[in-house]
Length: 303
Ligand code: Q46
Ligand code: ZN
Image (cartoon, rainbow, N blue to C red; front, side, top):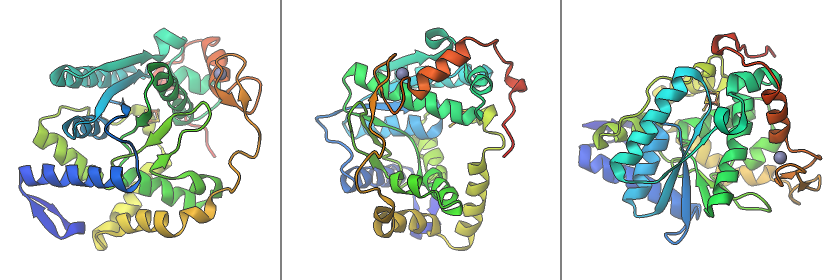
């Protein structure tokens, strides 16, 4: 039996799978994420959330392919790619692959040092650009990511702690398409980490359990721990924190007129940008021109 305190309910395996599907269906409908006619590209890391999401969307009958981005983070990347490929093979599903070292000449440890960014910042920039690029090139309508309720609540917590009002205005389960950007959606926002792990176990999905070695020191891990303490004392708090924000506060942070600075096309890749060259092309330039950096040598800059 799986006990969910925030719902005051317990489920057997088959009923839990049904519950999980219902939560995803509800998120897709409530936020109008996509329709059965649209083509979806799900970003897969080999972890429980992204593989679970791919499995759920396939089960619900959507047209969904996977996208795996090789980040060049040592053994972690080797293993995560293996899990993503094994899942695709087991379901007869299509996996699109992009490899940062082979296709762009750098890996995340090197890119982070070359661009003087924290590893997760260089990684996030690379992912956002390449997910979007792959979706545009492949004719997909939407990119889906495996961000779950814990992820979104932790990001919200961090944005509130620092009153990052720009980010608060854009922290939504759906970011609509705009010039040069495909729609981005997060269908797992109604499910938490424990639920996704249980779903994968019940469905027999093998996933990478190890955390990315570069996540060490990531502030969001601390925010998750803090929120877990609150949740333990008051089940349902995380859900209320995030969904009441969406219902009652998020619109107050939205800028009325879209981009304040006009966008133009990057002179290299054509992506929308505010400068001559987009941040991704600038990162590629710096990273591919520098000496490779060993994984253990990367340190997060102190703030
Ligand atoms: S993969 Fe990339 Fe994460 Fe690793 S470097 Fe950071 S952002 S922790 S989801
Ligand atoms: Zn560019």
